[in-house]
Structures are given as structure tokens and as C-alpha cells.
Length: 181
Image 1 (tube, rainbow, N blue to C red):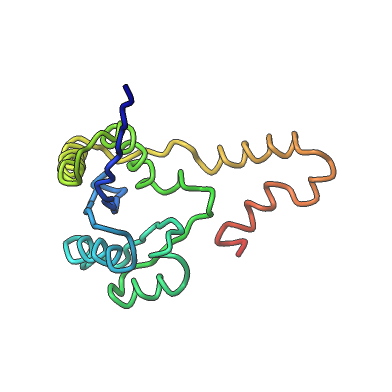
Image 2 (cartoon, rainbow, N blue to C red; image 1 turned 90 degrees about the vertical axis):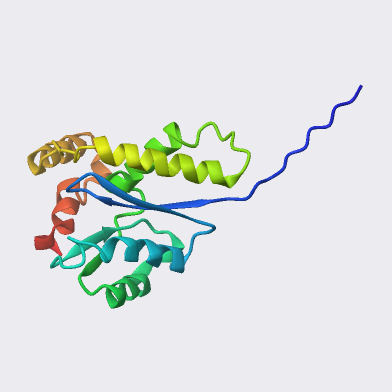
């Protein structure tokens, strides 16, 4: 006897989120797809409420997704919300963006295993997790100081091959600081 298994794709749901690092608060939304409009909807969801609407500056640390990549995206966000400053960390430094840490938790605790029969339960589970997270989360306390960074870079330089020490890690770090730019 032969059994045929069929796979019925039920569609996709995009989960966009912003993370307030000072209050460990997530602002999330689901959209049928990603893009400029969904990203700007998220920005409006955050920026039209206090304390963000009246803040002197609000930094948006974003990845290099197509909906918020480059100067054009930064200008679009600033035109809509003049107190915003878009920040793009280096491509391989997603760990600096705390919303990425939140997304990794969501991946492990909410959407894996992917056993949903349709999109409504996915959205419900995401919203329920976000509510629970917001009720219990505490701001992340960085313990890695600039002195720790200097020590790490010095250790890396001691282990670098001689032909690669033309420009040391410390020199690269100095160039990446505001004083070095």
C-alpha cells in the first residue's frame, strides 16, 4: 500500500518588532509581508506614543533588511519622525542589536516547532508571548566595559600573525570611535 503525504503551505506571517532597551519593552506587530510600509507602520506604532513622540532623540538600531537599508531609509524615517536617528550596525554584529536577541528567544520558545495549521494561531502565540515578555523582562545590563574591550583587543593582537599586525585591532578600534572618525 502506498501512502502519499501532501504538504499544504498555509502562507507566511511577518513579525516586526522594536525594542526599548531602557525599559525592556517590545513593540511588535504581524504583517502579511515585510517591506517599507510594514516597517513604517511599526515606526508609527512606537513613535506616536510617549515618551518617544516627545523625546529629543530616538535611535532605531536596524539590520540591513531591504525595508530599512541605507541612507534613503534613514531619510524616510527622519522625514516621518524628525527625532529619529537610524543606526546600522556592521553586518556581522547582530548581537549588538537587542531586538535580535529577542527574536532568537521567539524562534526557540514560540515558533519552534513550526506545527501551526494556519496563521491565526501563530499571531496569537506571538502576541501572548510578547505580553508575557513585557510583563517580566528587565533591561539588559551590559557588563563588558571599554577597558574589557581594550584588554580583548590587546590579547587578539598578541595572537595575530606578524604579517597581519600592520594595522592592529587597537588601531581599528580607535578609528571606529567618534574621536577616530
